[in-house]
Length: 75
Image (cartoon, rainbow, N blue to C red):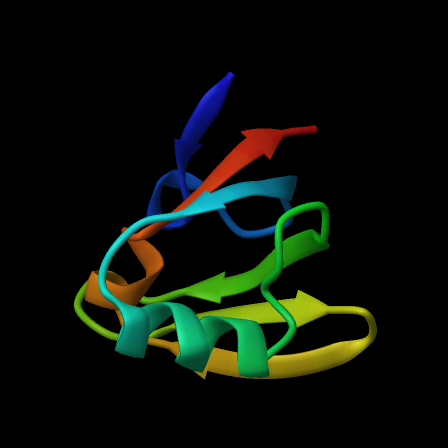
């Protein structure tokens, strides 16, 4: 099942399938390690704030708008 990253709940994992959006958004996400094939886990998801992710052992936060551009396959 392929869903946007912001649809995952805390503790769920997924594999990045595609990144939508413009070149700027893609560059930013790829720089963080969110490349197609990467396994990610949602650590914390605030209702009106950022989403805390773990990618390859590194944690970082991204906004919900940017997270909606990352399509993942739920594991």
